[in-house]
Image (cartoon, rainbow, N blue to C red; front, side, top):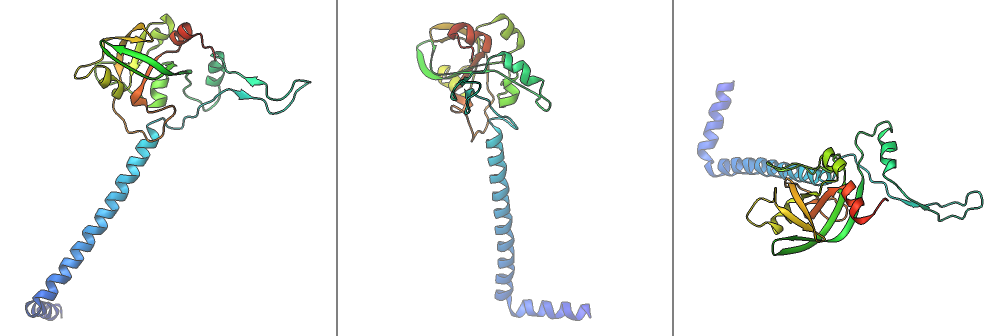
Length: 221
């Protein structure tokens, strides 16, 4: 039976070569189109996930605000200010693995030799690296606890701002003037995909120890 079916099939192929070719071509093209569409969809999904996670995974930010209700004769609208001591309290909350201070400053002046630019600067603690997925490139490092403790004037640069300030060379170990004050660049960020962000992309950001930020700019909130 199978021999007869095979003979009939081969006979049809010999007598209807064009139809057989077009049928096989349609099947192959349809299969390729489906595979390409699935591949494109999977690639787009991975790119979007990577972009969303570029600014941190399972991370949330807490800001000061104001009260919405009066209390014991005090009016509503009283400011709620956060202080560095609150970080220790938050670190004791169940389910919280990492906590970091974050003092922001827009329009910070940077100068490396004759090159000048302005960008967003943050004063943070070492945990910020893992929280924000700001990992150092080879040969450098992120801020460490000793930087924080000793108030070292060190800086970590996003990859884009590092290339603008030090074109064609490594920024690690170089001197950098931040608002006219000398800092040493200890690391630059590995390039990453980032579609979600806060105060601009991390690639254009410079971070310094939170203790140094408070000492220079006097910010305690």
